[in-house]
Length: 350
Image (tube, rainbow, N blue to C red; front, top):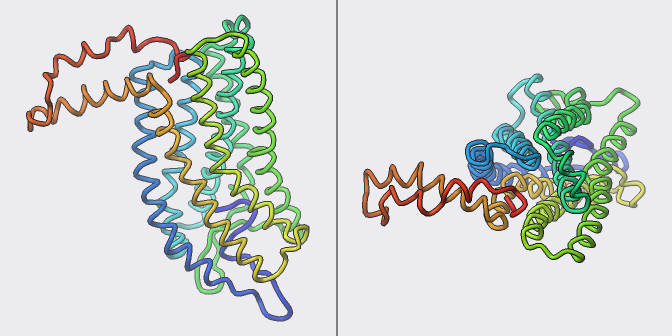
């Protein structure tokens, strides 16, 4: 699924014999399908709840809500393609050339849009705290929608090579879905794609986030405000978790693509790198279901909305069939959490 390389089909030659990498494919067929199945279940439920709460309870009243909604949609793009990749890892590509292109494009669109919206969330916090007066005019729902449309356009543009060059092709005795670049330009295209992923997905976001949080911390040190601290903590955790899950994959892809530069252009090193790609990419995919967990633990408002949803929509139905599971009367739910407390602004954290 990687844009810079295909971990199961790329061969290095040592002498006259090709480098055999059957262990990499075997590992992927055993390890990836069950992992992707778990990510599919938890990620789909978690991000669907985020979308539901943002639309139904928060009503998308702020720019931050718009960005968080789009971040959840980015994660869902990853998640909905996982059954296909799980099947591919276990067997071969049986879904045709069109699905290969579409799902590869969706994969990279989700990757780029996800990091872009995390950047926007960081800038949003920066404006709200460091430039509070300007933020009153700039941080509107309208501007949130407009910038989101632009970000999706940029993400789709960045993912076009994945859509264009990925093809379903029979190699040896099985079909693969992998990038096939123009003849004579394979090396240059692979290096360009890998550098693009690392620059757009790691370097630029890191620079922006370091600058924004340095300014945010300086401002907060001058002005103690517990609500602002909570809001910053939530976005900061989202940022850190992103880098913990995606940075190893980006670094391994960089090392794999530039094996000559790292003196790793031998069969053993190449096989180890391909195995590392499988592991780090699987870890990166787990990120799809992490953000809802972050909201639940770091977002006070999100926990309250989630509690209200389960009390009003799920527990009340369980009460009808099994009253012993429901200790309190349903009509007391409204007293535990009133609309007025639920409609406060994001500044107290999601």
